[in-house]
Length: 387
Ligand code: F0G
Image 1 (cartoon, helix red, strand yellow):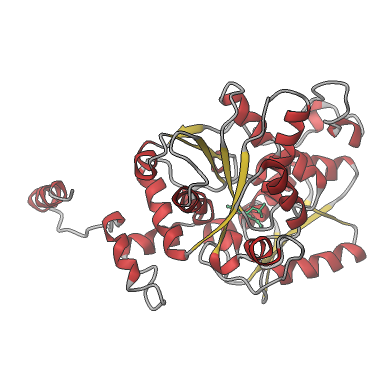
Image 2: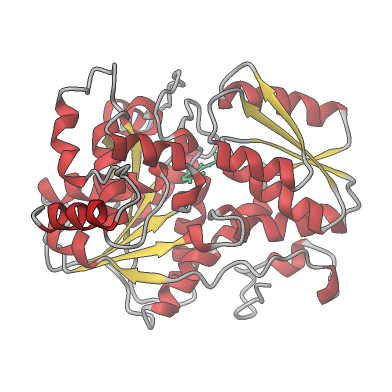
């Protein structure tokens, strides 16, 4: 549980909730996620000091858990029996787990057919009422907003302020892991834009409290097919955001009308960060590269590495600088994507099919063999010839 760091009232978390006995905190021991040096990606990008803060190492496999412990505890403490969220899969998995731990019922609204099986299976096992609506994420949000006006259901989407407070943890942990040496860049995937807002808020508060002497640049990366924030900044100078119909295989960030775009814009402006967009092919490539580093992540997290390559190409990130990628979800969240990629099927029948040939070197399709020693040895010898 966060404690106020001084009397200035910046960390008001405890004031917002009635005092809680430790045993009433709903927790799965989230947080304390690892910070990894990405050796291969570092030599690939020419940025030696390249690290990943892996939020996918949280109990339900995504960054949502550090916010969910706070918001689920708030829901419980205020006497709610039902909690609910619209989700692309990770919020729902996390919410369902924390609701179950707190003996609350949970309602999940997800777009039918557009979330990964891994995430769907989590909310089923944790006992949520899971509704697959024939719409997209943005349609689920609209229905949820109407529902909470009519029913005593506690809303756990990332507009919930307790979730944002909890998600600040990643930035505080990061600075602690870096022994309070401020990195030059933090790169975050952008969907509904709650996470970038939370990380930015934490950094600004730490700066205000003089825990850090300067601010890292926080940059946000979106998938090209789900890029309303990128367009807002690049086409309208952040003056407005035009909602769009989003489409990307990185289903976690398949969001066309991000709720927290104004907060994220303030984070960009106050830290001097950039917003970048990346193609489906760039995402798939970056995901395999993070995997080859022995780390792995889900597709939405890989936009960070893909975005870094572009930011460094245009000189915004320089070789000597320290860069942190926020990996938001675990590799096992979306095994379908990974298996299709390695089998070479991911881009079959798409416009990027031809171009996808360039990812061949990264593919490690399983080989089916006769069950003989000779067959395995010849596979081994063939593999040794691959550069
Ligand atoms: N990465 C992953 C793995 C996510 O699940 C999400 C969002 C994001 C990045 C984007 O974060 O929305 O704070 O900008 N997932 C939400 C969900 C929308 O319902 O699970 P954001």
